[in-house]
Length: 359
Image (cartoon, rainbow, N blue to C red):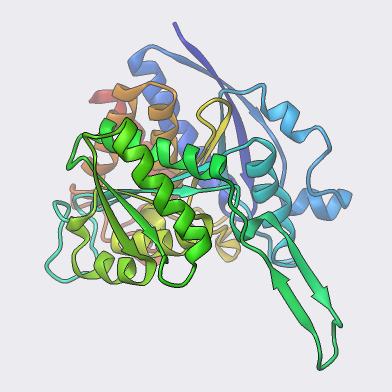
């Protein structure tokens, strides 16, 4: 019987609440499909930072490398200046654990409303592969003459051929594995960012011709991509893009799949430890009220099990979520609609776990 060691990071606000429901559903899947999980809690987040003055202990990455995966609730505390926790925990771990892929499925599930007119689950089902450790997020740059009329701010986008190639290879392999339309779209800005996305485009076609001749290659500027996400999302199968563009277009992707409350993502190191999380924030004003929607956290757990090779368990979790979404018991995914449905954070977790257990 396989045993997986999972590091749990509840984080801030409602993060621990939604993570608890994800773990509940994960355990139901483990019992049904014959594997075990061993979990350990890590208190990284705003409360710890305010108590100790330390965002992460020096050995945090080394400790997390001992696990098969990291399962995250949410990071973001109202009493901590924006950027401190996000950069000090999320970005730091992505870099130190070399989680060089951000994987974002954009999938409209049955029973979820999309703001797009005349679009349904058959139209919205694609994956964005975002390079996750380079670009403008490397922190290269600075300020000069700060606070004066002559102030200058620079932040430099940096890419290496190595970093581009490994992101592209992951995306090509994803398109091959999905076996949907076998199409990979490079999202860039070659008409203006000629150096950076010129590199991406050359590498894209060279790798495609040599290693992935079975995968159709397409290209779209990032601004056109945002238009087509709204007008014709059915055109896409797998997209690959840089860190900044990926950060932006995946939030649009979350909206067309029904909102942040249903969107999950993974920070992937295919050769190391990966971290899975709901895309939405920590929603601190609802902390402790048992009213927040845990669906995204549950689906992050589904992604995590799929990544670990438990594909049947992952499929069962998605089905368990869809069974609730289509049951008529849930009026919507917002706090107001969950209350009106007579449900709660923990009750939603209970229902999905029961669905998974019974099949």
